[in-house]
Length: 305
Image (cartoon, rainbow, N blue to C red; front, side, top):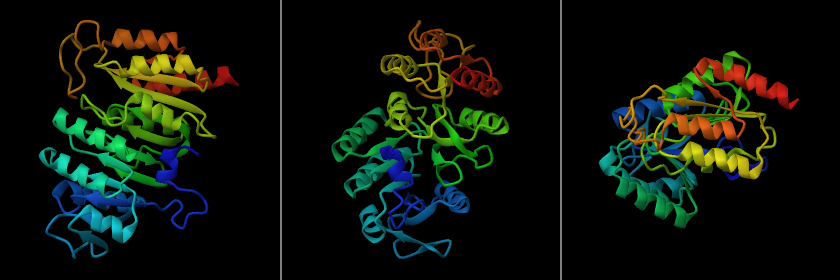
């Protein structure tokens, strides 16, 4: 079992197997409170919240709130935290979590200053922790645990992994997969900021050895070279599981930033053409529309039989 699954699900012998505790930093804020409720409704074990100055209170009358992450970790033993604080407070909140022993930190805020993100990633590397985001919809094992802001409806348990830069496209493509009979084993939102705690290649390495993995969907977008790097890595290691891709922004004008801070094309660098070309070299078909993804995946799975 890969490390990410040990964090999210645990081992059968664990007392909290399939019920790993999650801390919500910013649980009393307008944004954090809404999504904390949604995660609880989904079945995620929200075991503690953190809001400085509100220690001793309870969220929804059940979840204890602490002033610091250390207090929450000491009381709960949690190794996972999701952060809902404003961008200007992210550096302090993330460093506090990592210093307290958090091993998986899901960073929801967008527009984090690059220097702050780099400082957090450096500390995470030293602490042996995983950062998902910033500007991520989150991570989930459908029908088991949801750590993020994604709606539950599109997702269904299964054996297809989905790695996505875009939140909205993750939902749309998961819905198309589910409606075509392809449930998901795990979905990871890479995040749309220029610097990601978990790059496409990192997320791929987290899931590539899942024993029951039947296929992979990569949802990329213009800007940067993470898709090209991943395609080359897939070629280099000889990954043979059925894999398909979708690239957002194929019709975008060159040198125009599209929505995400990282989605900007300069010349041919980061262009859709560059990404499609590399995926073609890796024998990974690229869908022209999200609805085409399950069709291409079915075709690849038939070829592998």
